[in-house]
Length: 246
Ligand SMILES: *Cc1c(COP(=O)(O)O)cnc(C)c1O
View (tube, rainbow, N blue to C red):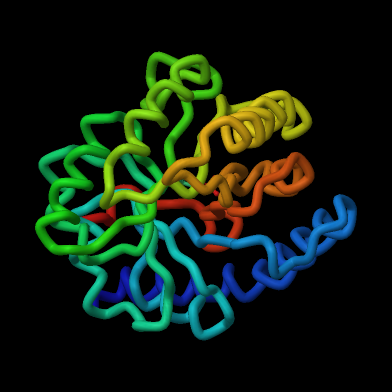
């Protein structure tokens, strides 16, 4: 191991140890405010660029869910990950990469098109398994982001719900960056409304159980607006260094 990498690992472990408890407490406080139990919230560690030694340290300290963004990076880490952790895919997934992760994760949170869902369904069908998915919503209607537009969601869910080997479990979103977390609430509230309305409208082969929204800067607000999965990276591990990923 190079000296640089071991220094990075040490720094990230220390960062994690300084911040994990505080994050858990903030989650607990947000839960209390809205009358939820902390057990109802999944705190998923967003682990892109984070060395596997640091991820395993986090798992030993009580992190039960991780989310990775890049297929290649995930595959290079997966062998060394502690087996107990739940693994989700949360990044932009290309149709031709589905085959590489279909056996590696228990949920794909970032399903952004009918085409992608169809490919997941096809490959799962060949293997005789099903995949839990969340549908990604482009709630801010940003050009730069993928995901279903809110007004297209119901129609697309009906299509995807016909696929027998994928199970729609809820919605995921990365709202526009807001300087002030308070401003994120408008997006979280819209997402929560979509989540409730669509769950009430479409029932066949759809169970709207997970609403995945909120990251380091705004997970408290997200929980207060109805999130039950929050995806936290920077607050757990410190700033990411993109030059380090393989
Ligand atoms: C990186 C990432 C996160 C975590 O972002 P932070 O601001 O570092 O907490 C959450 N969700 C997705 C999809 C990500 O790519």
